[in-house]
Image (cartoon, rainbow, N blue to C red; front, side, top):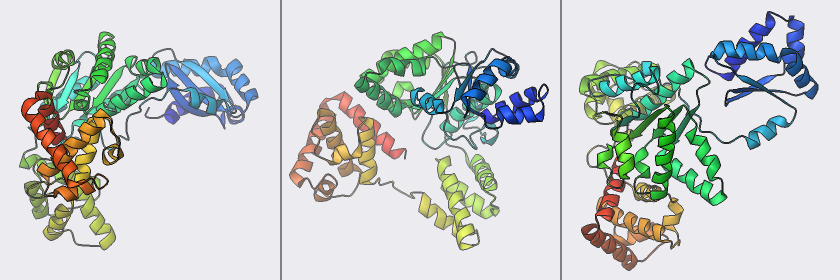
Length: 435
């Protein structure tokens, strides 16, 4: 069963064994399934009269059919009329898995560089909470960490639809925590994540150095782990390389199974290229496949970007997909040679690291975190790009060159004397280069 509608169709099939088609149409034609939450199946009907009939005449049969489907007791809630809107407004936000079309184990291309991580992820999907807990998958951007993370969620949800799954990115965990503190909803935030069966955390590296976030994550981790439920985490580096990671969290991450993903070898890249092309209905000549695999060596996501660009050439321009077209597509998608990041990317990553917005850094906000993040961004633009001091100042509401120079000098001095600042600049630089 892959959806709420599948579950409801199975329930109606059971009811159909006891009721006439007319009765089914009368009482259930406009009844819609809307949620499965905390072992309660929620449906909505426009009429309160129909709700009362469903609860008095058919509730036992419905609950028994749900119990047969899930092999556990499931409660029934029937909403009537405008109660649906009230339910949605009061229902705590959960974090459903992102759109997972394609993020399945059967679509993950396995090679020597990722076989260990794939096998570990698959084992977790078959025996969550008992195979490897936590499972910590790490590797550079674009190699399939998120694919494996979501494949675990997909496999478990298909087999056990009632499983409570939470998915969150590291920086979003910080943002939601800060929001809960500001709005006085800390208890709701804690309950939201601590009572799940499967906790999927993407890009955990973004919580390193954020003390309040790490403290909250530590307690969340402990609650889930001690309940025997599964935790899966991804990162662009192993815990030992996160210089600002809390020692308690490092110990817990390392206490599970560590699985790294390396860039694929050329044979695997060729298989990936053909598979991605086939998924989009594109047939590539061997020379074109070889050129893509030889040119894109470290990022699987870039291979997919090239294939999508080639598909657009074929559909929009009716172009022949030969090696020349491949070279043009690669030039559009992949940075060949030395990577020079844009100032926009540097400002964005500097802001993200401090849980700020880009406009905070560009504007006149003078809070301590904002000022430091702004100075780091100026320093990195100066060291990673060819922009002049005047051009850098233009990125920050036309600050003059002396202000820019002073900021750069300050960060240079701090890097030499403050290991924490050196680690921060190194982490932000790594995040920039991972894009």
